[in-house]
Image (cartoon, rainbow, N blue to C red; front, side):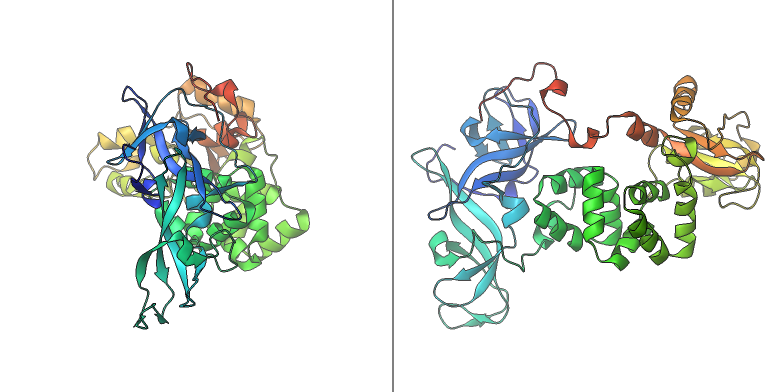
Length: 429
């Protein structure tokens, strides 16, 4: 900053673009790393920056030359090693927002909405102001009772900032990350401490949490699901894709998995039980039982409406599977597939049966992952049907499921400098 008293509100930094000295985009700010001393003002030491590839790295504030007009300018090379929070560090957005603080004048408590940091003459960044919302029906210092009043206060006007309150909420953090895709929110969740991670997970709605769980590393999935109340854990499993739910249940102790299956709706549990019967690295273990399935008489306009569903991955939305009734897996005989590109070239009233590709390659559920991946590569396809001996459709394998099993088990967690972008240097800090 150009001035020693320039003030930056930390919550507003979330999503701010970070540029290098020549104007190239480095990434976007996701959090601010703080050191919380027993006495004195908290010190900001760096930014958590999300760089291409969804990797979160640490950018020391000593390498920040400007924070202004919705952008951060850095200098020097960036250490591309994945950020790992140290014991003495606190994430301002992830762990401090909505913390309960108490006014030293005895006028009540408040929720922390934001923190302002200022650059000191020593070049350190220190928290100097807090933006808080008073708890409802409390009197301000002038004796006037106001509901939910928001005020900016000096750091020494409140206590409790450095203490994790048992009633700390997560709504503001979730609002800060509302625009993130599930995979990005999963990364943010992974970087939080276990207690805060559970708080945030508990505050997410079922659909959002299910989407995020599908993107988390296995250890985080098991930890979060096991910590949830059993009824809600079953609801989350129902909201997940059947294949992802089956993978997660397969990582749980048998007794716990059986209990959760028993709490799920019978129809949802049935599909998951079918998938659990297959080995992980077979077509049956990889497939989802909920691809887009239509009868041959379905109009192309209707089929296109079905592939617009938000819960479909791009791979599964790329084609529809045409079968004889029944249309739920296991279906009647598989007639073939129709790719979305073909449907877009046809009149809306044309039936899918008139343009079906009947030469599609299908696999049996016991086929190994290696054969499935070779088939996808050979024919440049994004999804493969899985059929039984009578060619009834059992499910479909999408390219994202194949990649998920071909990549190293810890791929979601990133790695160190071994896979950093070419030319990335290592900075201090």
